Every structure is written in structure tokens, then in C-alpha cells.
Length: 193
Image 1 (cartoon, rainbow, N blue to C red):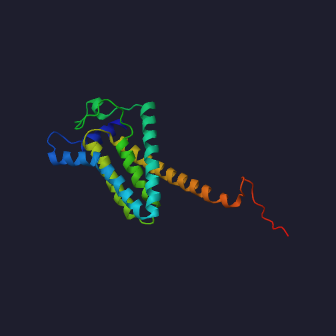
Image 2: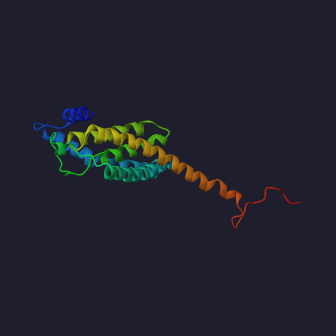
Image 3: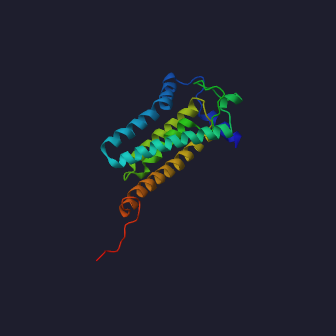
């Protein structure tokens, strides 16, 4: 598996003859696109309650993804390609662990959080943005393909669990409250004559 990962990395990583504009675009995709995706979600949340739900799901999911990535990196510190002397690392990252990609995990978590919307086009557009972020991390020499694939799977799982958890919490807040009397006692359902 490591040989395939390294070979795929070498195919995508920008070589010494890469045009400057492609490196600038990859840096933009890596650093700015995730913020623009969050901004688009926030703008949608201003105008529609379904977007507010998606935005809140994305924020909870991204926080959870960040915590999970940090835990994985602490428990299983897998090096980045530069550690093995592979490719060119266009943006310095040092020797920090790289599995899974935090940038890709956040972008895919935000993108998959849009699955709860009644329209598919926002999620598909956001997934294209997340895929571009993931590509940029490989192109800039910062991650192996397995790092971004694991991040995409983590993002999908975390966003679904975050959305389900938020939905369950909102249901539990609204349903049983009407059946309780002041003081926390259940109201009697029988009528007194």
C-alpha cells in the first residue's frame, strides 16, 4: 500500500518545472478555499433556516473533525512525504504528522454537512471545493493520497453523525416539555369531573 501511495503522490506532486500560477492556485485552494466555503455556508444561514441547520452542523462537525484528527495524529504519528525525501514540499510543514489531512477533513466535513439540504447542487459544489483542497495538499507536497482519502471519509462520517446528533437534541428539547407541569411533574392526562 505504501508503494502505491508514494507512486500516486509522485504523480500529483508539483515538480520543479511547475508553472508559478499553478503553485499560486494550489496555495489559494489550500489556504483560502476552506474559508470561502465557510463564508458561503454562513451567508446561506442568514437567509434560510435549512442553511442555518447545515451551517451549525458544519461548525460542530469541523470542530469534531479537528479533535479527531489531532487524536489520530497523537496516537499514530504518520510522517508526511518530506520525511521520506519524496517530492517537493512547496509549503514548509516541518516534521509534523500528516495523517489524516486536517485541511481536507475540514473541507469535506463542511461539504458533506450540506447533504441535509433539499437541493443537491450546493453539496456537489462544496464537494468540488473540498476535492480541490485535497488536490492542493498533494500538489504542494504536503500529504500522501491516503491522508486526503482518510480525511474525506472522516469528513463524511463526522458530518452525518453531527447532523443526526443535532437533530436528536433539537427533537428532545421540543417534544417532552409540553407534557410536564411546573415543578417537573408529569401532567395528568385524565380530566377531573
